[in-house]
Image 1 (cartoon, protein in one colour):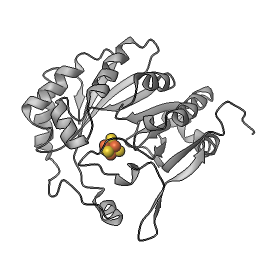
Image 2 (cartoon, rainbow, N blue to C red; image 1 turned 90 degrees about the vertical axis):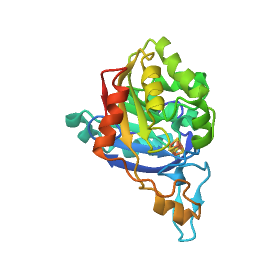
Image 3 (cartoon, protein in one colour; image 1 turned 90 degrees about the horizontal axis):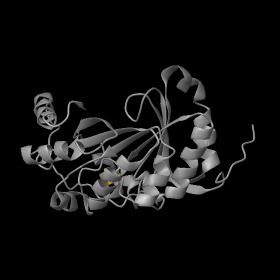
Image 4 (tube, protein in one colour; image 1 turned 180 degrees about the horizontal axis):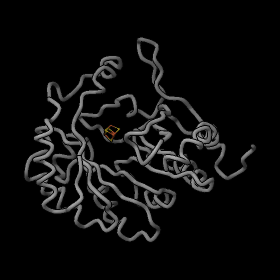
Length: 262
Ligand code: SF4
């Protein structure tokens, strides 16, 4: 079938596409990871997703590929039979998917037109006009809050978090329905203090569209990629938090909101 729509030939840099059924949204998902991110989180498990350009390692591994919107959707459509029974769909992730806004918007808009459920995973570090234009085409938005404290955010993520928090508050004014899920990667020693967990919980009480908060335990999955890219891993030896610690952190955030999971 030959699809004709505006933006079909728009090009973006895609890190990779994956099929997943555990994280990244409801049901079976086709996840489009885009390249490029303005943040530099100290624990980032996908350092290859941060630069906007295509990279090749000393071991001849290439990260990133230029694709058109239609080329991505052609792959996504192959999975439509799996979406039907599982309630799945396409998830656009990063890097930071908002950093290639036109490409992401065209992709999400056309997927929705074709009846494909859409989700995004984002740090929401973008102008509100960009955020608003993308959220219009999204059924579920997973949005990270890594810190509410601005100094900690600047120190460990490399940028000011005020645009992120402001964008989150602006979602209160949106009329169209979508599910908003806040995710906080829990990094021992960085954002798991009682004070910061209370700040996160308190901040989220202001979000009218919030469905739930999910705490994600820190893991070291990306460390081998740091080695391949020849860049130092800033966090050194931090252990994955224990289930007991996750539960204790959840209890603190849950003092502000009922729906907190990990
Ligand atoms: S926002 Fe995500 S992709 Fe960007 S640096 Fe942080 S963890 Fe990595």
